[in-house]
Image (cartoon, rainbow, N blue to C red; front, side):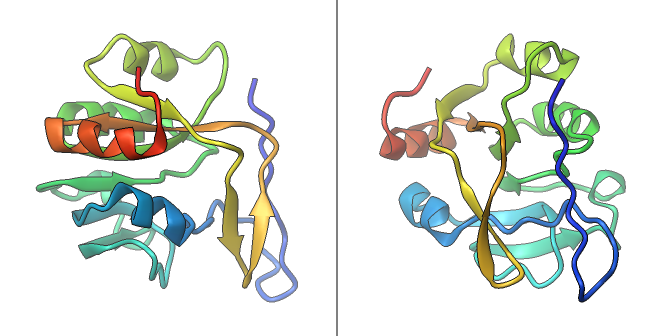
Length: 153
């Protein structure tokens, strides 16, 4: 089971899955996205044309073009299923054991590159999480971009 780490911040007094993907990930990918389907508010690092935040409910919206997906790590399964159905984009996901969605994505046409432990941007500082993550890609151009990180399965 994945250790779920939600943080309480003095500014909001709430818990949140909002972790900003660091800019170096996008710089290394060298891609532009049509849509970020699970964007935290005020995400500025994602090079894309449109953002769906929690208020927009990205799962209920139409997805188009190349999508970027860094979904809530507390409940990635519906996002992974939708991403696989869409078939075009890159997803940053936690590497967890014994989850149905991981088996589903592993057996799909998606390709993977393991990333080093990522320090996510949160509240103006870098916050590391306690579990590994991976970048997954669907679509030839997206899979090719993963090669910028190294070996791709």
